[in-house]
Length: 296
Image (cartoon, rainbow, N blue to C red; front, side, top):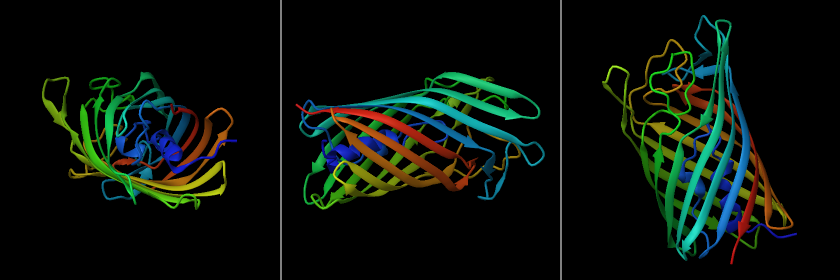
């Protein structure tokens, strides 16, 4: 059975952490390590998120859909991620998700299914030792958005083209079975056009990811993960569920397990909880993934 090295492990981070409320992927989740020249990594994940509580603009929780109307929000998706070593120190990557979102209450049940947003990006290695430092840049195409849907109908994206820049830092004690990784970025968000033609501005965000990992066996890694987004706009006072707020913040934490099997295949299982948020849902997320890696 092939060992899981830190380089191999960080490839799994890209999609293991992609399960947020709408299964949106962030380039920060790809970690600091780049692929070898002409190396390939591909992963398919299936995930589900569910929530019956949401965070107010003050950080307090109240029920979906409002204080007076109880409801639930569920999101299921098939998520695809791939990256390729274009040069020895340069990796290109992309991600997309096919999603099914359901919003249900005593008043109605609404469901939307289709292709979500698509990310394309590149990551360049700056330092290889004694720690790994890389820079990344990516852009998101808002393919999943439906302009101005009914307030009670979910939408597959926020309708805004986004650009993200950031740095990723990783350190490994290999062959000792420990590692740590952290990424910090800045997400530039544009605006979308409302039905009446007026622009709706989405505030910029700061995405942050940190994690530590330990290998109790040559083919198994156990991880602790923290993922956060800090919205830079003033929080909105919401009196009903809003799937696309102009700004939001949240923290997701949870455990993860990655196992290697013969043939270059990796299996992963992630559980994420949302202990804090502003203008977002208090969801529980679970994700199962299968990955394949090829190194020339």
